[in-house]
Amino acid sequence: MQADQSDSSIIAQPRGEYHTLFSSSDGDVVLGSKDGVLFRVHSHTLKTTSGWFRSMYSLPQRSSSPDQPLETLFVDEDSTSLEGLLKIVCGLVIPRLDSYDVIEPILHAAEKYDMPGPMSVVRALLATPPLLSDPLRLYAITCRYGWYEEAMMASRETLTLNLHSPEHRPTLQKLGTDALLNLFALHRTRREGLRHRLDDPPFVNDSGDTSCSNCRSIVDYHTWRELKYAIVMEMDGRPLGDTVCNPGLLEWPAALACWSAKCLNCDRALYDKTLTMRVIHECIDQLPTTIEPLPPPYPVPIIARSATEP
Image (cartoon, rainbow, N blue to C red):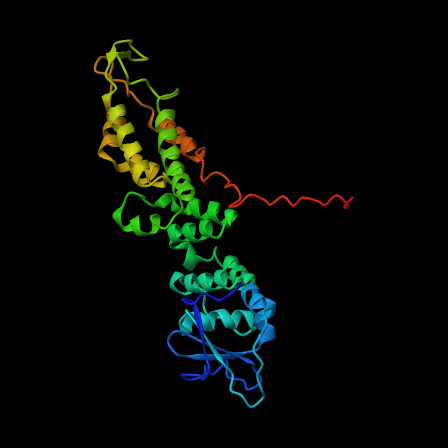
């Protein structure tokens, strides 16, 4: 594997200043960030932690003398990202990985240089509150790297979001087709699942003329129809559904009108508020909470055996 010219270049004489943590004279490799900070490290560390560097050092290297200054390999990462990456692979105190602006460049560099160690460290921290606070960005990262359990967890956290809000568009545009469709399917399935369930018993049928269960006179259940619409719209904007029962069914004008509705003939309440709220809550609890398990990103390679193998 060869270094891409856009990612790295070799300069015979170092430029810039050494990073204070990576300036040991016994280091035999000098990496330079794109903003000119130098990092002197051991080639053994790079070869054992990076598939990219291991492949590079497997190629014939030019001869050098002890008195000859080390060449500098300039890479495409800035000093902050390169520092975080090297701290992890060199066993130093790692930076605070509590921001996507910090972890995304490190993940990108770790992926490029085939460094599973830094990626595993970041993956272990994904369920921490600072990263969970932006579940859509978390979902994008977990889908990109094929971390399926974390992707399912992140999809559950997105249920508080309205995916149609313009503020989420930039993040959604970064998702692959499958990841995007799976997330929209989860949100839509919860909304439509509850909508269909509200048409089934014990809920009343509002599609035609029905009669009062007490006096059998004709009753118009328009208040229930309007409340169902309010519930569905709330689920569309916040598929988690936690705001449907409280404050929704307690404070919405459509809900108050529903609970106060009575038969014009016998003055009996048309709806049992306590039972209705309990069943709606149960229906929401039964809805799916995560995307469907994702398939592997690539097919597992099938290695043909030779005729001499058992």
